[in-house]
Length: 263
Image (cartoon, rainbow, N blue to C red):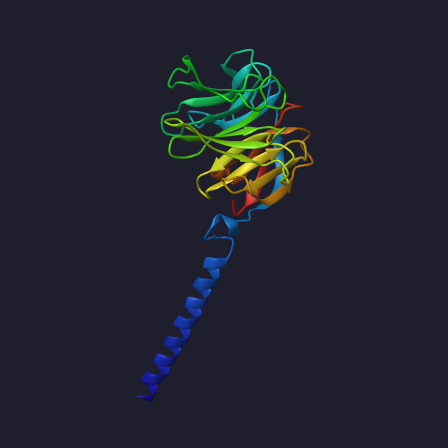
């Protein structure tokens, strides 16, 4: 009887400790409950060279074999993980941001100055549709549409660079459904956007302050990471498969792979 009580006491103590350990693990950043608890740790970086002129936006390529890269000079390029560069959509436009619908593989891009949002229809990407024109900010300037990212529920998030810094929500069915003026926040500009569906957060590249910023989907900055080693980081893509964030440099044509722990 005494032996049984001893075993029961040991078992009870073990269960208490196990519950405490599970509770502690549940609250650590390794398994965050909400985006507000999520704080990945930036590590070292490496770089790849491309022949893309003035890369200014990044997203995953349709076949997952590298990136689509928006070019200030000549449309959109396909760039492999090692930097091999070919033309994807050749057009002499100021293309500043690019994103892809993960289901249909349609590609969306923004045309600064004219403030246009376009869709390239999969699978051949030869049909170019004008979806929307943002007429009340940035029109005719070099401070206009710079970033675009696929969000969810057939919705895009679109960033106006500055004067003002604006985050626009655009539904493919309903048109513009929301707008957030981020002027006066810690962001100096929106250079590019990348929504992370794994963590339900938005990353914003700010090339003026040389930072990448972890934000809520409404643009509230939760954490800022310095990328002072990048001269003009105008494109950003979050890559969980490689535990890194990629940032392209508009000045040098390089793409930087920045490793993160707990991404």
